[in-house]
Length: 206
Image (cartoon, rainbow, N blue to C red; front, side):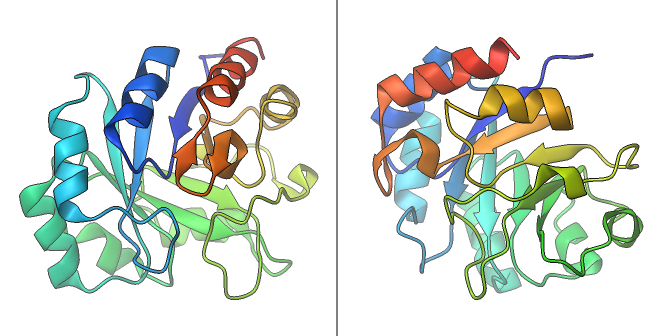
């Protein structure tokens, strides 16, 4: 099996971005959702990317954003991949001609094979924990046993991952990538270098 990729999400400053990259992260997530404690302004995101390392995938996270706002971000910030955490349709995700990931909150009524078809243009589905009225970043995990095998889309596993459970998560789910935010923080929006290093080490050893 190919190595599971690692995304550190909710980066709000250059220092955290640089440390995550140096520690071995494949992707950096920037949250363009103003209600999030990990929200990053366009100017800050532009500065982070311009002063970070090349060969990293920079992912912009949006939640039911206006098309004009997404395009404003893309005009200023060198985003490689989009990530949609709201109720966006497949058409709304695909209009930017960028690779995109569609987040799925794993409630009881979710049928993943159907969503793979519904979002056929997506590069991957990101599976996150369902909490009512919270679009992501809950810090809670869900039952990985409910993820069916053999899905037609790559899976990015999120929701409550940390250095203690990521190795088991990868062994059990065998996702294309893992996505962590709160599990490597000192406080919301501020990363812990030790937790990042330990998380990446455990993920690579899975």
